Amino acid sequence: MKKNILKSERVKKELTQKQVADKLGLSTGAYCDKENGKRKFTVAEAIKLSDLLGFDMREIFLS
Image (cartoon, rainbow, N blue to C red; front, side):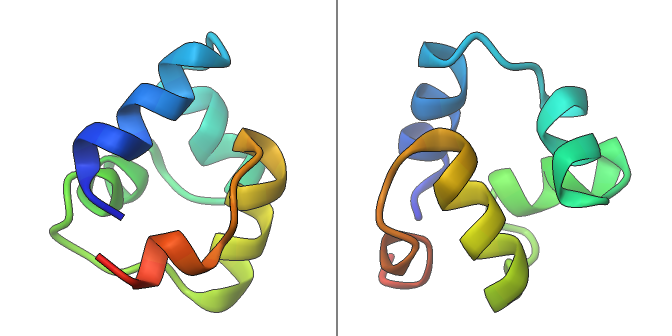
């Protein structure tokens, strides 16, 4: 997923990167890298993230 879309969805839900990272079981730095496209999400992380932010997890992998 493009970082601007992922960040936009996170901000809409009024969540910080730390809050999302904690929900995914990641460090804030690891989540930041993934949100910025430097690293890829695992399938398990994508499922949790899609539940948390309310979008189709396939979007994470299709961009």
